Each structure stands twice: as C-alpha cells, then as structure tokens.
Image (cartoon, rainbow, N blue to C red; front, side, top):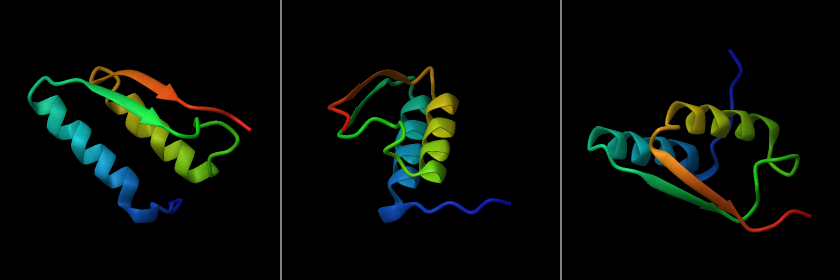
Length: 68
C-alpha cells in the first residue's frame, strides 16, 4: 500500500466537508492557490484527484489562481 502525506490534514478535512455536503445534496466550489499539476506533490495530487473524482457531483466548479 502506498502511504501518502496529508499536511495539516487538508485532504481529510476536504473529504469530510464534501461528504457532509453530499449527504444534504449540497454543492461545493473549490478555490485553490496552485493548480494540481506538476507543482503539486505527486502523492498529494493523486489523492486530491481521487477525492475530486469521488465527489464529482458535489464539486460543481473549481478555480485556481496561477502557475509558475
């Protein structure tokens, strides 16, 4: 099993928030400073994509500020 890091429990928090929204048929907008491309830690990025794929009917829109 591949272990991934979750600094500050950010991904755990996001998954819980999206799960709570899904239970009440809510929707979410994701705002992020850095897009999940090459700048994102590989394991962190994979886990984030897994969460976003899982809650694709809850997350209705995402906005990312820039790339370097």
